[in-house]
Picture 1 (cartoon, rainbow, N blue to C red):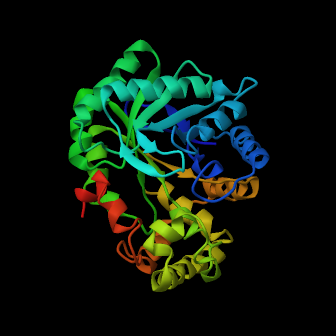
Picture 2 (cartoon, rainbow, N blue to C red):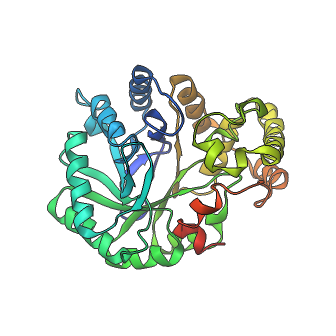
Length: 334
């Protein structure tokens, strides 16, 4: 598998990463055995970047990853951890905490749950509006100096926050949603990231399954967060967005590949500084995603996709208005 570097200062990782959230939270029940087998299959295929969060299943995801990396697999992985999102015993959300004392507390617990002596990339999951980003990044920089963290990343922040953070300590990569139907990053954030030499790890490349080619109108209302928090999965918006998927399917069929593979390949084609993260929870979905690394979209293919799905074609926001109001990336980019 080909590799890409995360920014000027970040690690070399395989061209496709694996996001683990769905193995513990938010997408309904997951099978533990299949989750472990999927992580192992990813590592065996050459995937190196594994993305988790201390709040995914309130620690469950980190413990799952610890189990998956046992037996000498840790050295083959680049472990990225998000922190700062607060949960309650019922799984509810209580904001974010980016205070320096909290940063070091979160890191201590993550290191213990992961059973490792270092976190390869450590990043706040969201900007804490009550704490200057300089203070949060400064606390992670202390962890870098102490050897507990290797690289600092960010998630869902806007261009100005990216500049301020990078002035404190080099930022390896920005994790942000980027797909054929979520392209807000292109306006201001991506140009600034490239100016500063910061890579992008793109999550939501299949828009949480919406543009995977496997979603259908019959699945509307399924009991997970998509039906509750994402207007794109609801009512007339869903119908409109599934029509867009059929436009992608036409090209996929002509190329002899799947819709998901085209969607992943499209993100990868936006620059060598971008690493798509796929949220496969099963080996069959992982195999499909891995197939995207062999899909090379031509300039004509990319032009056809841009014509079929213009940047503002999606119906509905990627989150509801309340959730969007808490995203620094959205506040600064419209």
